[in-house]
Length: 558
Image (cartoon, rainbow, N blue to C red; front, side):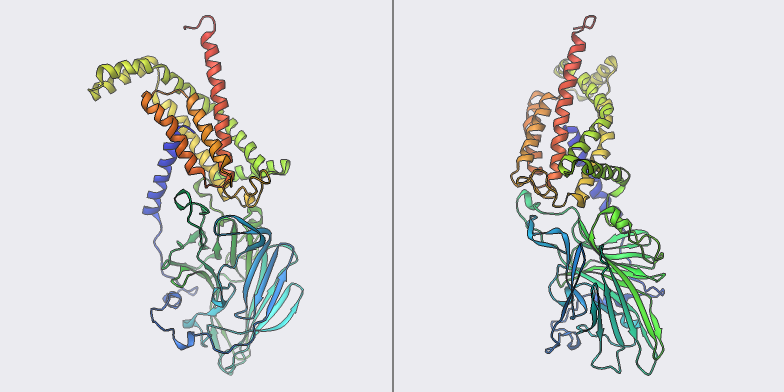
């Protein structure tokens, strides 16, 4: 990439920042699925300012001994606890855990449970106070009522059975896949009718990122962990900053914790409307909550709520295969919307398909990136050639431009006038060189975003022993340095009309700056930029030799 490309990238980043500042949708208060305002849900989740929690919020001094049950299939292992009938661990067996410094821990499998303690474990339930006629405790000890292969039922019997109904939670994990099925049953054994409105929680700890190197960018993800939901056809998330909160209703596809490569999300089943709330709390926890419509139960009546929980990698084909949400149990839940390619999705999706197609042939994602970069370069070759011809023509005018500068350097208006005359006489336009580059920019940005968002690169090796994980930086910094050298050579071969002093500064400064910026980026991205630089050098050498040969041919002016 030359200096014009770099300036265009910086301009794109500036536009993105301004867009975020001006057009981010303001937060709305949560509404209940039945249409009423639900400010109480927000209030109940907002941390209290009291120095001492209310007595009913304290953990009981004496509790029943904790029991644990493990559900496991080929790809996921879930450790469930009797404390809250929640998940202590959700481990993805095909993926290693990533430490806070960005490196993989090959002794541990990726765990989607990030917090410590019952209140930080996902899959807890509670009830919305304003629409529930009984008081649900904050800390609950459940009994294991039954268990078998891939299935367990927890039951909660309140010490005050006259006041709280019997509640069962049945978790079922199929032999294959990342989808956990949950059924919550509320049985009214009381003498009077009750009303209940269920809330399902997926909390998470804030993402810890080690601040080191490259101004603290080491290990920083492009997509930080955040509470996210698909509501009314729109993906909503809150910034992982304490105090952030937003909510939506009534069309909910899913709600959960979204990370760069993994998703833990709850999908409502069998309901036509629901609500979700996303918040970043002051107690070191974030949470995505799903609330289903309220139900009135006569004495002896039973209500059942079905929720499916996706806990797995963000592979598009896998995400698209999951159904559910308020739109209907047979329709797609829209989990693929958790992969955010932005407005360039129409370019990113074909690139991802091509990347996986190359991988299916060569069996190495590093080599697949090289082939993908080559294909993109070939497709853009006509634009690249047009740009190089324009730059060559501009460079041939440099002696005339120097003469004009010498004569009119102190008169800016006259200097610009003479330069435009020079362009007109020789049939050259500066825009001819810029336009092809601008047309290429969306393609390069799309390729960049495709590689950054692809879980396929997670823990994928390029050259074992050197680059064992294309989603992590080059541990030896060989690729960034080689890329800087390649950029230096590319600048050497590229004709320029700049002042010699400026050209010399750009020759050394831009490769050095880019090398510094690339040091801590994922190796897969740096590999793509490095290969692109090599192809640019080869293309420039070929173009220079070709134009020199044409110029030296008989009949051409010297």
